[in-house]
Length: 84
Image 1 (spheres, rainbow, N blue to C red):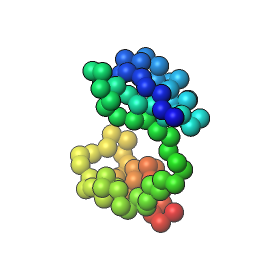
Image 2: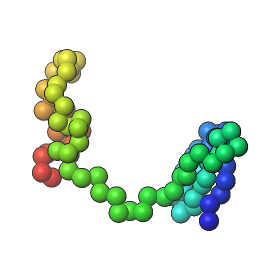
Image 3: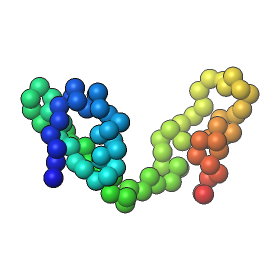
Image 4: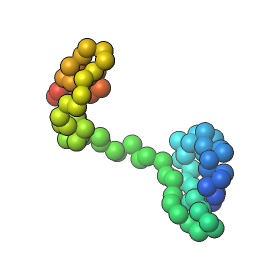
């Protein structure tokens, strides 16, 4: 069953709504008195896929890092070792 809320309620009660969605509740959000979108729980079957398919992971390095680390070092920090 879906609970109907408006955008103002969503903004002001985001934390409570997120908690309710995590418990399995669905929401239909109205924008200007019309249904705009639904908020539904993730079903657990979402597979983010390997980092190698992430377009940001394969993007070329831009600029220089202020911490002295290379782009490959940042990739390891963000994504872990390739293939893991």
